[in-house]
Length: 532
Image 1: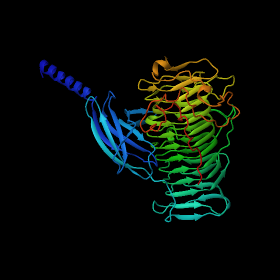
Image 2: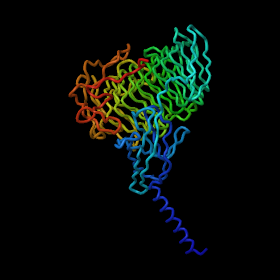
Image 3: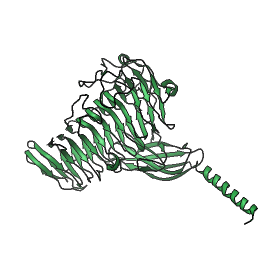
Image 4: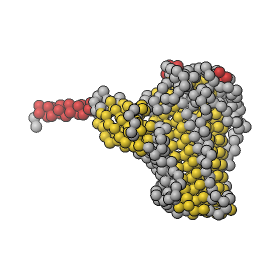
C-alpha cells in the first residue's frame, strides 16, 4: 500500500469513527418492560442505545383500560448505564406510575423525544396486582390456641392458597418457617422470639406469601435472606424489637441490634405496619446479600425508634418506592446507600426528631428522587453529606437546628444548617424546597454554593412557629418525643410554594401544591395497622 493510499485509508477510518461517535448522541429505542407490578404502582423501563449527551426525554400518559381520557404521569428518568460496588445497570429511561387501582388493566403511552434523532411513540399495557384475599377456594388451617415452638408450613397455589390462622383464642409461636414456600397466608398470629439473633418469620426463597395482622416481638421480625422473596405482601403487623433510645444505642456502631422487616428480592409490598425498637426498622439488603431489588413498595408504615435507619432502602436498583411513611425518634430517616442507577423514590415521608440525617445518600448513590418530605431535626436540615449524582429534589421541607453538646452516635448530627448537601454531582437537580433553622444562625448550602443560587424557586429562612401549630423543636432529642402534627399552617410561606409534579401532587388545594409531606388542611394519612 502506497503512502498516499495509506493516508486516505487512515483518513477514512477517522471520518467513520467521527461519524460513529457523533451518532451516539441519537437514541436507538429498544424494548419496553413493565416489571413486577405491585398493588398500586407500575414501573416502566425503556431500554435504549445511544443518547450519550443524555438529552432524550420520555413523556408519560396513562389511563385505565376502557377510559377515554389520558392522565399525565411524571416523565421517565434518564438512567445512563453504570456500575457501582460490583453491580451494573443498563442504558434506559425508567420511572413509575403511582396510586393506581389494584387488579386493574392500564394503558401507558410513552413519547420518546431526542433532538438528535430517534424519537418514537409507543403504547404498552400493564396490570396491577390484586390485593391478596382469602376466598372459598383457600385451604384454611385452623391452629390451636396456646404457645408453640415452630410453625412449619406447606405451599399453596394461586388458585388454592394455604391459610394459617387461629380464630379461637391466641396462637403464639417461637418461629414461623416460610422458606421456599409459595402462596401461603399467615394471618393474626403472634410470634415471640427474643433469643439472641431470634427470627420471627423467615421467607428465604418464597413468593406470593402474605403476612398480615400479626404481632411479632423478635430481634429480627420478618426476614428474607438470599435468594430473597418475590411479590410478597406484608401488611398491618405490629413488630417490636428491643432497642432503646439513648446516645449509646444510636448509630451504626451503637449498642443496638435487630431488623424489623428486612428483605431482598423484587415486587415486595410492605405497608401499614407499626415497627418499633430496632437497629433498622424496615430494610432491604446490602452488598453480597442483594438479589434483584427492584419495584419494592414501602408505604404508610408507622416507624418509631430506629437506633440507626428508619427505612434503609440500600442497594435498590430501580423503581423502589418509599412513600407516605411516618418516622419519629430515629437516628436516620431514609437511607439510600447507595441507589444503583434508579430512579428510586422517597415521597411524602413525615420525619421528626432525627439525629444524624433525614437522608443518608452514601457510597455514591445515584438516581434518588426526593419529593415532598418533611424533616425536623437537630443539626443539618436538608442534607446529603457524601458525593451523589442524578439526584432530583423537589418540594421538601426541612428545619435544622443546634448541634448540642452531646455526641449523639459516632457520626453526630451534621452542621447546624438549614441545608448542607455536599458534592451533589453535575446531573443532580434541586428546586422548590423550603428550608430553615431553629435557634441557630441561618446557613444553607448546596455543594459549594448558597442555597438561593441553586434553588431559584426555593423558600429560605422558614421559621418553626410560622409553619406549624404548637410545634416543639426536638432539642434535646432524648427522651423520646411524641408524634407531632406536621401539617403546615394556613397562610404560611410553604403553602402554595411547591411545583406541580404530575401524578404526585395533582390533588393540591390552593393555587399550587405545598412544600413538605402534607397539604395544609388535609386529613392525615392512615399510618400503621388498619382495622382488619
